[in-house]
Length: 355
Image 1 (cartoon, rainbow, N blue to C red):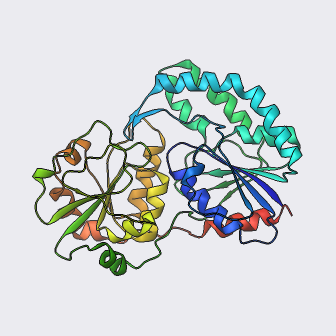
Image 2: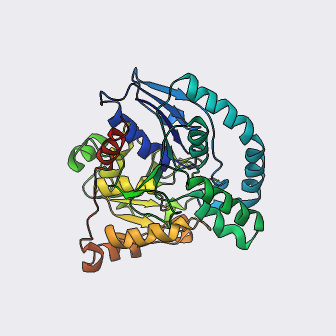
Image 3: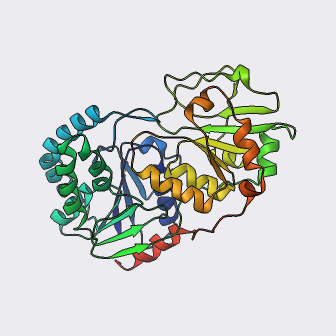
């Protein structure tokens, strides 16, 4: 089977989870080639003779000023431009699929590849925990454009052959066939004690990992002078992060840094939640602007994670003690519900049905 796999460029969550699925699929004999199509192909840190990378953008997502701020005006401009280019893209990508004898299209989580599959005459699978029609519908209260676009995208999603829905799901369109699958995410390759030893973490220090994904903390300066000596902030790959007062270790596999840390401080996103779940690292979370998925991720935090809310103001002023004290109480330490995991195996099983 030759697979066309589109991955949204919105943040790092889509590429990190689908990258994991691709790694798993490359081990299967029934997979001849995977064409990974995404604006975030540079995130992929592995090579394989079956894997072909194509840098291409087939959805817009949401424009952001930083991890915590939505830019609706820029989002609308990008969407209008993208809608104008869809006829050309449809023609080009349909030709590509036919020329390369693509058997199936899998998309995380754009609706447009479903249209390409329909035009090519091949099946398509949606994979994700939200759809863009649901996200954009939230902004119809500010601009009718988003409501009209949402209705159009909902129709596009409806043509998918089936949907594989991940945990932390938002309300979905009416897919022809829908299956809930297990959690997909990057896992640590080291035990907590091993990771801490390699990184030189001290036993008498609490390490808080700042994880703010692709959009970082541009425009914010943390008051690290206010930190008590027993707390150390850690960061890796955070755009706009200051160097003063923050430990920035070299790591080749980010989930090992997640598991080494005592806490992760983040804005909720699928990718970091999955990595924290596998690493068993508790979460301090803050707001992420008017992004409707946030409400469903916070519900997931309440159900499956040791977690506590912390305002952005307290993060900037480095006031962590109150939240950490709560996390160490009986309520904060209470075990949560368990998630179904190994979603990669679920994807393999479903793809086998198309061979």
